[in-house]
Image 1 (cartoon, rainbow, N blue to C red):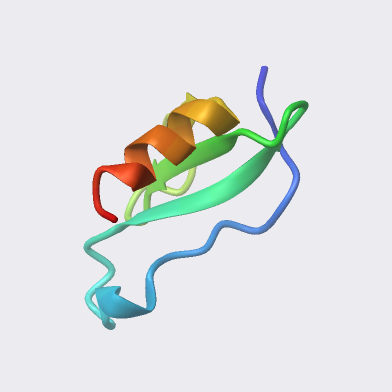
Image 2 (cartoon, rainbow, N blue to C red):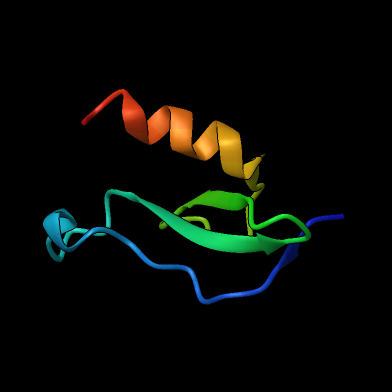
Length: 60
């Protein structure tokens, strides 16, 4: 099971509507967990650190 080691956070661009995803750090290896802000107890999408960096690189 993935251990979430930081609070989930969402983009400051998401506004007050809560229609967004949230991201948190995971252990080990400093990966990321992503969840739907409307389903905080729902499933997590987990990615490695390298996978997260590659994803972000698509928007740079």
